[in-house]
Amino acid sequence: MTNIEEYIRLDAIVVGAGFAGLRALWSLQKLGLKTRVIEASDQIGGVWNFNRYPGARCDVESFDYSYRFSPELEQDWRWSERYATQPEILRYINHVADRFDLRQYIDLSTRMDQARYDEDAGQWVVTSDVGKCYRATYLILAVGQLSRPKDTTYPGQETFAGKVIYSANWPREGVDLAGKRIAIIGTGSSGVQMTPVVAREAAQLTVFQRTANYSIPAANAPVSDEEDAAVKANYRQRRENARRSPSGLGFIPNGASALEVSEEERELEYEKAWNRLGFGFALTYKDILLDLASNKTASDFIRKKIASRVKDPQLREKLTPEGFPFGTRRPSVDDGFYEAFNRDNVALVDLKETPIEKFTPTGIRTSAADLPFDIVIYATGFDAFTGSLLAPDISGRNGLTLAKKWEAGPVTHLGIGVKAFPNMFIIGGPGSPSLLSNVLLSTEEQLDWLTSFLEKARKDNVQEIEADAQAEQDWVEHVNERAAETLYLMTPSYYIGAEMPGKPRVFMPYSGGVRYYRRILENVAKEGYSGFTLR
Ligand code: N01
Image (cartoon, rainbow, N blue to C red; front, top):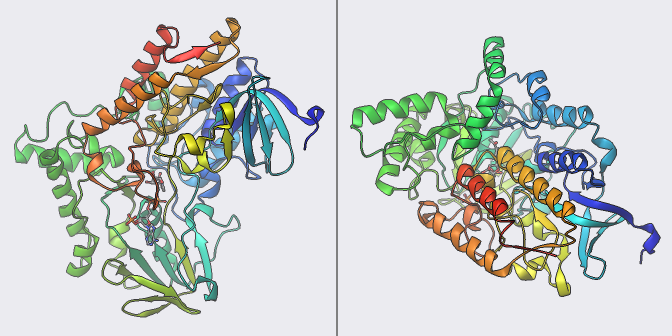
């Protein structure tokens, strides 16, 4: 048991040193709060520190997937590509930490094991795996939405003589793929990004696919000096446009329904979007994610494109997504995924036809064959949204644990506050736009709002901020109502908790868009932070 003197005493403790945690630190320091960040890894960067697999890059444009809080930073940083690679993003995060002198406030290699609300003291008591203990008024959870990788295993894996690697925990020293026989299991964004890069290095690559997903070309390109100058000349306006767009990507959806226009016009629009917009393809028409018939026009267009990219008719059929509307599982953005299957050294195993039975000492046995491998890469995804929030033991009033409170699925007010967990705030969590938006923009929106809230609370001498039960109920209803207006609920995906057996099936992110979400936050503030009890 820790002596009371041994606690590190803070105004705020932030958990996680990724994009959100660093931004929280910067904001809270500026407010004058004594703040520390604790981070389990020995390096900062969050998902960009862990996901070092070949081909990893962001699918939001670099100019938009970057901090907006410092116009000077914006002007000084030079992105080299439209979609930045993982190493470039990690360099950027490190640059920000140095530039704003943040490192001294970050405790690395310190994993939060437990956070307990001490009601008498009105403080969060945080303990870590390295024995450091903290007491803080505010607990800010910036632990990410996709930071708890699934630990997928198959029978016999321990007998396999080769290497097993998880894409979300890629060895820092790198992996020599040259001339190796490699398996990639999983065809979400990670598997799709990795495939063409691994294919170029490997002697033989076999991709194990359970569900074919829709993927759109990234349309990546170097950022020219002219483009860099043009964006920087107007950067503030670009940020404002992104804030006002529903997705935070800066694209305003075409105001028309896909069904309102002629087939020729639609094809032309899709073609333009296909060649330029990447992820923004989903916004070519306003109702692609809202109306099934409209969605079918986009889904059919993508299927046609896949057909034109894959030469072998059997492979083409297997790689073509069927049975769910485009965008209802998160689409991938790729740089040559389908074309990789035209190479002689790349094969596909359709797990629906020939499932994996087990690993053997030499490779993988499917129901059809024994396949030899040197390296098996799992790109099987994450326990999304709630995994990293529920991994530590967090308890609020009367010892109520967050796991118990969220037994039937996450409930929050605005995705930020939780009843019975006073002074605890979640950034980018369930019930907020997070993964249905430019997540960095939503993060900064939430943190700006939260900082103003805390500033006011301190001015008014408020000791405790707690979400109301009714407000929570109303928010969950609102999140569900907005989701019901979309097609998302039609498809099992990590948006609804379908990625983990036994996980409650509830819609996790907020689908109303960042613009609408911001208005709600602003109104809540105007109403004196309605839905929160301030004591
Ligand atoms: O994970 P996923 P991811 N045996 O969950 C399959 C972000 N991200 O790491 O669909 C065999 O999407 C699973 O199959 P199924 C982005 O938000 C962004 O790829 O469950 N296969 C699926 O094919 C993204 O959405 C970027 O049938 C198994 C795959 O593994 C999110 O992270 C890059 C299996 C998992 O796909 C997650 O992407 C990378 C099993 N036991 C990631 N279990 C960019 O910015 C699962 N699968 C571009």
